[in-house]
Structure formats: C-alpha cells, structure tokens
Image (cartoon, rainbow, N blue to C red; front, side, top):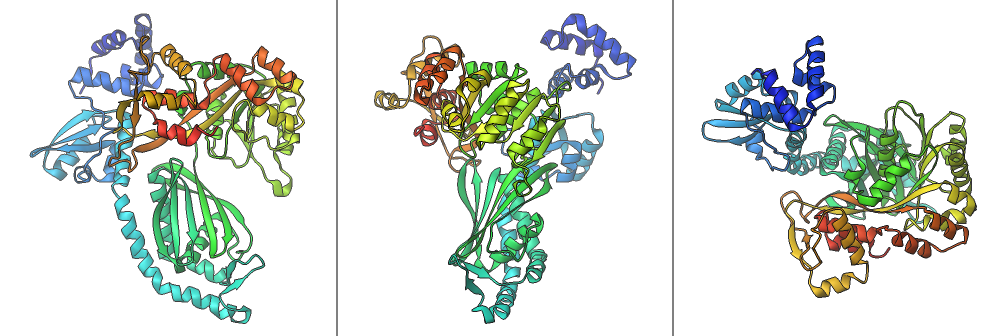
Length: 607
C-alpha cells in the first residue's frame, strides 16, 4: 500500500505538525537519503510514529483504533500466538463469524496477515493503532495468565511436600546435640540448623526455582513495588505492596519457608548459613524486555527469616514532571530552578513518597551532552545513560559525605546526593552549590517548610541556606482512580467539613487559573469522584500519582530564615505567595478526577 507523497505533504502541513516553508526542504533531504518522506520525518523527530500512522489511516482509509483501555477476551487474543504478536506487533481484538479484526503498527506486513489468515481460516481486517495500545495489549497475554499462577505454585508446592521431611530431617540430625531443630538464640528467636550445603541443594530443586520465578513474574505483572515473604507459626504468608497498600497474595505451607528463603539468598549472593543477623543483597531479572532489579532484605524473626524485596524498574526514561503530577505555578518554579547553573534543589517526604523518582525525572531533563552529571546514591535505583552513578558502601568507608567529597574532584556540573543524612553531607552539599554546581538531594521532613529547620538542626548556617536553596518540593503518593469512577457533588455539610483541612478559595482560584473549571464555577457545581470496583481493580484504584507543594525561597522567606522563623511561619508566607499545600494540591487533583477526597484524607490530612 503506497502513500502518495503529495497527499502526505498536504496532510502534514494542514495538521500543523510541520510548517509549509519547511516541508519542501525536508522532502529534498528524504530524496537525497533515498527514504520515504513519512519514514524520514519520523526518524528525524519532526513527527511522531503515532501521528504518521494516523495520517496513513486517513489516506489509506484504514480505521485507526485505540485498544489501550480495552480488556481483551483471552480466547480472541490467543488466536495469534504470543511470539508472533510480539515479533510483528499484531493483536487480535475482535472476532466475528467469518472475520477477525487485528490491530497493527504496520499494515504493510503482509506475511503476518497471511500467516494469521491461514491459521484461523478467517478474513483478516487490519486496523492501525498506537505504540502505547500495542504495549498494553501485549501485556494482556501475561495478565491473562495471572489466574494460572496460583495453580502452578500449588503444583510445585505439592512436589515440595515430599521434601519437607528431608528439610526437617537435616535440621534434626544436626540439631540433636544442640537441643533440636529450633534452638533459641540470645534474642529468643528460633534458628533452623540446616547447613549451608543442604540449603543450597534445596534452593536448586526445580520446584523451588519455579515457585520463586512465578512469584517474581506475578509481582511484576501486578505492578507491585515490594514483595513480603513472612514466616509465621503455621504458614508462610506472601504479600505484595501495590499502589502503596499491602495485599495478601498467597499462603504456603510452613515447611517450604526455609527453601524459599534459601533460593532468594542464592540469587542475591547472601550467606546461606547466616540466620541470626540481617542481610542485604540484590539481583536482577528480565521480564517482557524490561530489566527489573530486586533489592533484598532478610531479617531474623521469631519463627524464621522474613524476606522483603523491593522491585526497581531499571533504565527509567519517559517520565515527565507533568506525568508525576506537577502543574501550574509549581511546575513553572521547578523549570526555573533547573535553569540555574548552581544552587540546591531539595525534595522531602517519608520513605516511599516518590522523592527519588522526582529527582531522576529532573536529572533526565538536565541530562544534556554539554553537562557532566554525577550522583552518589544508596542504593542506585535506576540506571541512566551518560550519568556517573556511585553506590554508597558504608562498610568500606564510602559514605554520602566521602562520595560527595570525591565527586567534587570529578569536574561535575550537576550533582545528585541520594539523601542528606548528617551534618557533614549537608555542609558539603551546600558548599558544592556555592561553588558553581547545581545540587539535587532529598530530606526526610513532613513539609517543604520543615526542610529549613531540619538543615539548621544539622548545623547549617542560615545565611548559607538563603544563598543556596532554590526550591523545596514536598510530596506524597496517592492512589489514582480507575476508569470506572463515579462523579458526585459535595453537600454543604461535606464542604464545611473539608474547610477544616484546607483553604477551598485558594484551590478554586488555582482551578480557574489552569482552566480546569469554568471561570464562573463554584463548589456547588464542581464534580468530585469516588472509586468503583471493576475487573481491573478490586477497590477502584489503579496506579498512583503525586501530590506536591513547591516552596520557592523568595526574598521575604530569606529574611524569615535569617530571623529564625518557624516552619509554620515560613509555610504561611509561602501560601500567601501562592503555594498550594499538599492537601490543597490533592483537592485540585480530586476535581480533575485523578483521585478521591477519601484518599487525600488518608494520605495527607495529618500533615
């Protein structure tokens, strides 16, 4: 199917993607390189691949569809084998009596169409779609298998039950002279005496390997951020943290616990026979073309060892500040701060509030060929191209402070310090920002204004803080509503209750300034949303989004810092200057339909 270049040129100009004066020059370059005009424009970044497909769809008369939000029937999806679907980017999404509609990225792939026609005996109706739709549909091959994971694990557990006597027998044989299998240590905990060699054999048994592989893949598909494997008195409980909430995933027999822990220790290069002290490790797997790193923590408990694994998706790219939930004046202040060649940008919040993701997104924006970026982190959570990342190793003396001191001799332009934990690191970060470096870091405080007294507690001089800090970002993560949400309007009583937590007038002003609601809108006709459970989410929530407050250290706030004002006084002044608090930003996002008021109250009402 050949596209007429003149028709394509006219459509591109009419759509405003490329100006008319530039299109002729680009066409000449495409002829010189012997490439079709559309392919050349995509490769040179002038138009996106999806925009080009939409134009193909219009010119060729092929329907363009979006299946990213569709739940595909597995019977239809499986008409095309997964390897073929992935190789040719083709998805079966609707079947009729004598025809099959397929979504494609390239409808000129006749070999794939012919193969599917012969396999199914149906007339194939090709449709063009977006790259995101294709990714979403390919993931559904795996999601459709989630229900099978429980069966797979139960089959392997049945196999392992025959080994449970072997596990107990090993411990009992050696433990007889020590008081049995479960000998109490000095803390009152119970310790299994199975030797390292025996545990290694158990860890390499095929059923154990399959169980762990299945658990890891299942967690990735579920979008879990953490896996908890907890040894109880009579069972092993496995839980996933999804969108910040812990959910029971499955319960396994008690005797399988040691072999599961041993398998994870083998993957993480930990000591198999060390069961009295905590251990930390790391390993990596590839799933669906994505590298996922697992940060492992093993902790002795009364009934055995508890294992927690944090899932870290590597090679993080594509995030934007808007995607993370920044908007309006806060977004503008952040872009201004990243435009400086020196100074300090801080993100604050508790563990798991998305601080590091925000910093990596800022680094991605700043990562240009003309700058040298170096980081010192604990741990290195994502790998970034052209960024020199250093892992803290406190046991050999490589701390944040010593790492930062060494980085300053590496001619950096931009420095990221994973966390400011002590006086020395704070002092070095401030001095670095005074000597021509842009420094990004995190602090553990409850609010943006709280970062100032926290740094002063670390013996930082106020006059140095006002000279270096550009902005302070405080944040939390709230669960995002799924597509089946239900809208409603707050009653007068609910509005009065909400006013106890926030300044609704300021939120309404921001909503109007950013054209989220009409200029004549008021709270009596503004919709909020509540969760509705559906097939995709049992509780009506799916994924998470940030709520933020962005504090600019203005001239007035600098004077207040020098006078020793409290964090509450600083926050009051920042609000007078237009800053939305995290709770107010949450209400803003609730009106946009991203989350619910109940979720904002759960996460941010105590701040």
